[in-house]
Length: 237
Image (cartoon, rainbow, N blue to C red; front, side):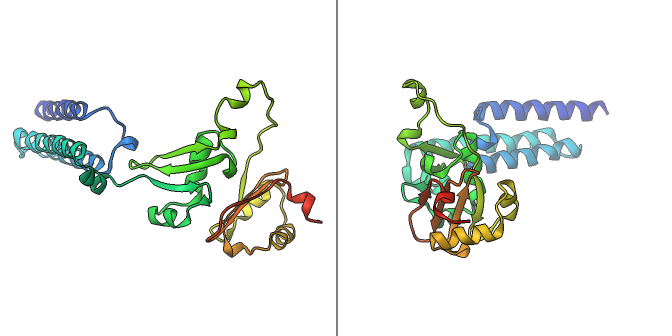
């Protein structure tokens, strides 16, 4: 029992030292090759812990080799842009001044909800507040607001902004989200009239967002986004 305890302690301390040597970045901040090495280290570390027949040195040596591989790859990626792009990929723009880049989303196997989550984390509730959204090589989404929605600008001039309205995704990738319609008491017949007024069909939409005051942000496939400030003023309900 004591031997098992000592072996586990040694492996734990070894992995801890190796991970500290590799850097302090969290899993969500790692490049793909770093995640792979980290996962392999975690898997290899469990083998000498669970099997006393494996010499301790044979358990530590592969971990040391992986750390060396990590530093070699890191050095090469610093020196070579081509290798860096191959191993880590390139940042991908998923929102541009024209709206949502639908093909880029499909390429990344992402959906509208992923962008909405990143927007909410950056305190943006409407797509027209965002100039660019960029998926970085580590998987995080960077949000660049439009100039009029950049942080602190209203405060700097002493302006008072109207209360923030939560945006609800009514149509996403051609599908109507009835749960979101219920959040703003939007009935199906009303939505039909709105779509008729906009001269679009739900299945043609990448996205249609709406808040309780009737502000709509929508984008059809292959077209730029459009904004209606108050759809209730334009549609007779």
